[in-house]
Image (cartoon, rainbow, N blue to C red; front, side, top):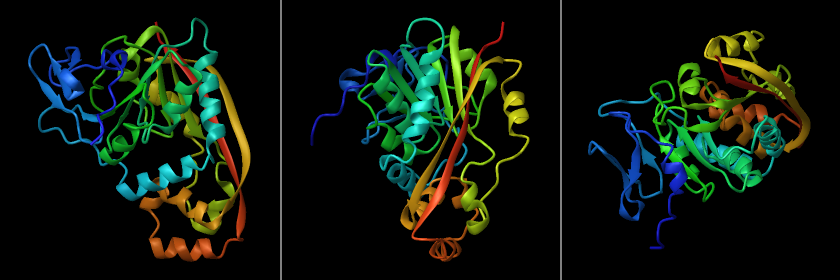
Length: 288
């Protein structure tokens, strides 16, 4: 067996023990993590680590098939424009380039890896409740560390430790995001716009974007964070039927559509379908 990829030391320094909140240090050979109080957490064979208090069960994350679909769709480059828009917003904030990133609900780590490619001196942590996603994220970038944790509970990251928090198509935890950000740090959120995947909604019976999305986003973050910038990204893809099936399978639509019904609906589409990718990108700073 080949040696495990070393964990980036500066990424380990961002983490906190989920039991007592103390800082964590890597065990010899990066076989796990331990805090000064002796709480230890083993590294999984795939390279990630689980940071949950004893007995705590996180919300059910994406299933193995959903994660496989997401990995395939993203690897094909269909959302490279979204990753680029995210990276632009991460880099655009005032001050020196960020050196530490936290991707909350970051799934396979694909978007975080893309941002790190633009920031050669930065390190990152991708946190997700799905162990299937964390297994993929562990290999996403040599400068990232993958963690299974509960983003709705206390995030296992030290106070005021990170320069940027990223949230792409994932839930937002305002209080915890404000706690882990440095005073000059920024949160960058990517959410679907009203016309995202619009051409597929009716033919496939997909979920629609909540028209009250902007208000709900603000409510989930304020008064802990304050908006400072907004932009968007919009492009038109041309997807074949297998790519459409993978796109639907990787997201929340997969939980609402029976596989047979989806297959029948996709079969009625043209061989290649135009699909709009449309997202809003907002940047926030800690309040106060």
